[in-house]
Image (cartoon, rainbow, N blue to C red; front, side, top):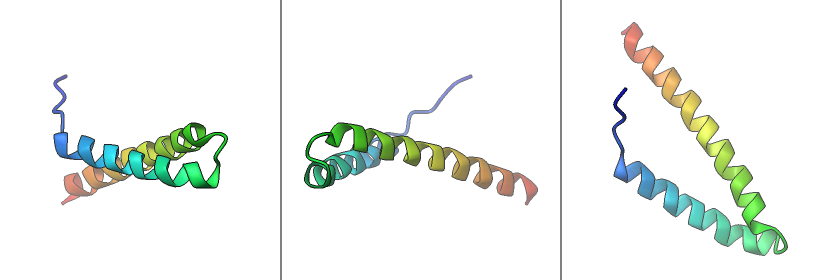
Length: 61
């Protein structure tokens, strides 16, 4: 199975991660990394399910 690496998506994720980490340092100054990691995991799960939903809708049409 060949996987195409999308540099634009990677750059977007990196910018979002940096922004969340920056905001988390003010909200939870003791553990900003853990809060950022939790939000990132939720974003990846949401992205996965949205991609599956989009693929399913495209196959129906």
